[in-house]
Length: 215
Image (cartoon, rainbow, N blue to C red; front, side):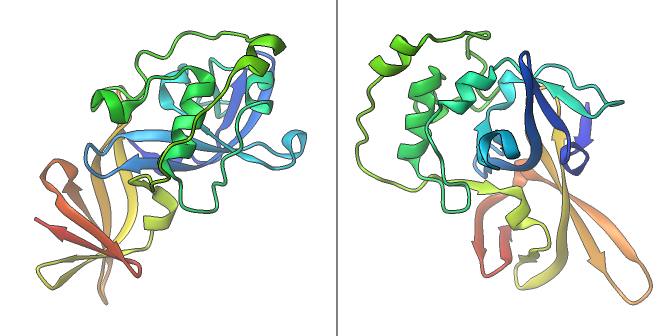
C-alpha cells in the first residue's frame, strides 16, 4: 500500500518493555530511494537522545493509538553506540551501529529491496556480551543518506525550470521504498500537488535548499 510519509511523524515507537520515543525523521538513500532508518526522539528516559531504528524492526502499526511496535528492547537502545543525529551521518557511525546490533550492512550486500530484511528477531544481550564487543572504525567517510526533514520545502529544479517545493513523500509500506516525491506547485490561484516517480530520478543534487533533478 502506498502511504504518505508525513502521517508517520509523531507515532510512538513501542518496545516490548516500554515506549522508546517518537518518530521525528527518516534517513533514506537517493540511489534506491529506500528508507534506511527512522529517527526516534527518546524523551526524558534517555535525556532526549535521538536514535536510529531500521524499518525491518517494526511490526504492524496501530493507527488508532498511533504506535509502532518494534522488535528491540529499551536496554539495547540504552547501551547502543551514540550517533550524533544533528550532524552529517558517517558510514563509520552506521557500521558501528550495525556491528553492535548485528544488523546486516545494506551497503555491503547491495540490499535495495527490504532494508534490514535479514535482521534477527528480538534478542536480548547480556552485559558480558556487550562488554566483549569491540569495534574497529576504519576510514571515516560520509554516508550518502539524506534526511527527509531537510528536503521538505526544498525547491525542485529540472532543466532550469522551477517545478515547485517538496511537500511530502509517498512510500510503499511493504518495503519502505519512496515511490513518489509530492511537489507543491505554487501559483496565484491555488496550490496544486504534483507527483514525481522516483524510479526515473537520476543525478539528484542538493545544494542550498535546491534539489536538482535530471528527468
